[in-house]
Image (cartoon, rainbow, N blue to C red; front, side, top):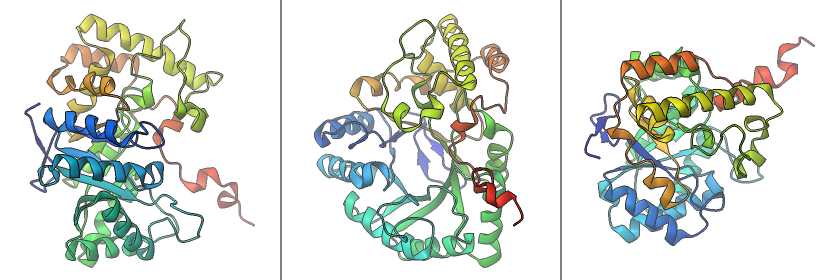
Length: 344
């Protein structure tokens, strides 16, 4: 892997594959040494971008990444990204996007990662209870203190991406230089608004779940026993085959698998290469749990999909369509809480 891409307008060059660390720790690979082996292999392959979050296995992922970087001595060679927002304890202020929590969360992440600075610090999800000015003000102070180099958002809807850009300009604050949305062959909703918005504001896009939470790994096929999955137990709405939308996903996967084979690629290569072909996408986050998973994904940046193949993909899953809305990663509270839609 020799190609590097510029993250938005920052001048920062990152690999087209970003190593996601969500599966390192209690949620996936529970051995710090084996996780470090996977990280070392990824770095040796040319990946220079690692993404984690404080909430992944309640800090254990960050700890594993920190130990791996200390072992390799390659901290200065990589772009290290992490996130805050998710609840990290039972207290009412141990999560969210407030100044109080961001300041505490970044110190915790720095300690777990064993580093003096974070290259990219991202807000993991929107927080309706916190004004974006409050969040950007806190992040700006962290940049000025040298603890954070760049800031970004994750899974923000397009209108909130715009609001954050306007707030930064209005108040003279640091702005989000990138957005991290979900994007795959089965979840293309961001093509309608988020990706065009990212392009308009000169931001990078680091897409997560390009294999649709394992659906595009080749393990989900018709007339085969479905694999056991920890994700399925935690996110049943995305995997429950009694749901019609998931049956539609399985139908699409079957057609995409046939297309991949006819094009001379694995389904994994087709899926990752598809996301990397979009002009707004800087990197795709891969989240291997094993060395085998990693090896099966490293070839994707070298795959160039023809326009004919892309047209056939569009015929299977139309542009801008997310088959199961549950794959969008975040739902506005106005949809999940009926009280917000009903006048008392």
